[in-house]
Length: 558
Image (cartoon, rainbow, N blue to C red; front, side, top):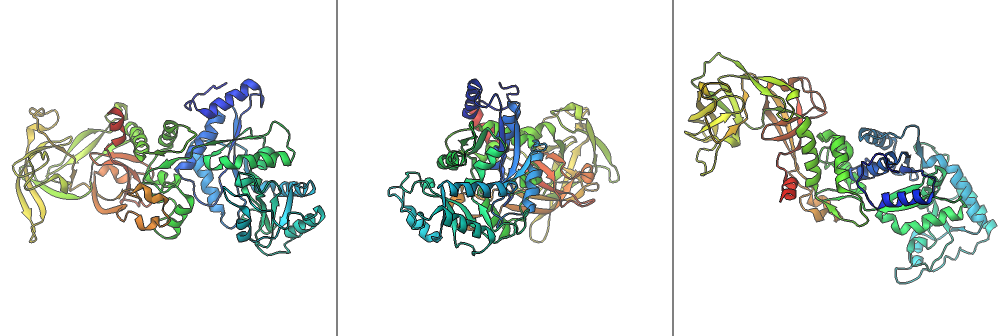
């Protein structure tokens, strides 16, 4: 039975363990992850990846990676390569079991010929519009195509000529002959093959007819000896067709069984691959890996870890009914992960200069700061302190409200890892904007000093102006502020125009000058940040992964 219980018990596990008890597959679990290479994978696919590979791992089975490349018009090698990278990055390995539906084009064609010979398929000349009209509705049965009664010989001749490229796109299709009065619309003589004179990314122009997903998928499963074909809930009504194809093609029992689970819906997030493509092609984002995108590559670039995403997929569980998960749970998972692993650093995003008037002009001292208070074994770093420093603009108010515990005229704050300072004067420009503060410091309040225990209510982060390095900081918000907009066809109009704020002149402590691509930090009081691909020597670029405020954790405690 299960030897590595990493997945919470769910109904799919119950099915597998019942199969074990009945020796349906001889204690064998063989799953597959079958993406179509027509775009980049997103967080919803991560749930399917973790489920399929996770179940195989849990039951000492195996999982295939198979590309459903049956629609050459929309598919590309770029997507194939990105999918492989994403699956590996998430921590899963298909070993030598990477397949393509196109591997089976020859076999699928042979089986289609057999379906025709056995009276289970026919060539139909109805247009797409006519087929929709003949199909009927949920309350009315469909009408049989006038071409349904063609002889086996005529169907074989026409299908072979379709294969030979004699007919233009859309002229004819091959349909299954099932039941036009079935209450399940998917069983009303569905299309098995269509004509498409398009070059395929693997087979080139070898084929001009391509199988439909509902035909290719069950056969691919059977040819690969898949036991449990796990897919999302929208394919539940397709299961009778899945079973019909396997039976009509005379595959031996036990055949693969299709099991459906609820797909991931995440609020404030575009979860349609078609709509994600529109965002990319319309220039609304910088590409598939834009850190605002819910793609796995976008999450990776933003700074999410595979551990956090796997943890999220485990927490949301596997259900049989659709629901929407709060994005705050995903954010909680990355906060929890980075809190334990990320070094701390001080970065002032919107700088305001302070001159500490009673600090020696040419003096610099190195202060000690822990890299991660959660993990003392991660050691310490030194931070330079000098007469001129930067703090955040928002950490000063000239006329503060009663409970403002940051810096104000005559008010004291502690500088993290350093001293207590007091605001003595304000320097303004001609427009009345603050350009500089003049402060004093208490030299006895340094950590370990005689008066280091003196209490003040506010503690601020800061950087030494003389030693700070310039950094670019990118602050991200949700692409959609209203969750219901993701279902709208005109969702583009509802995009958050403030989903990205770029700060060009943030000031960072000098330890970050050598920050490497992918390094993650907690910027004190700001959130968690990751070094972006656009970083250049001496000028790091940081993406905010997530802020510090954890609304989901608070709701769980409440």
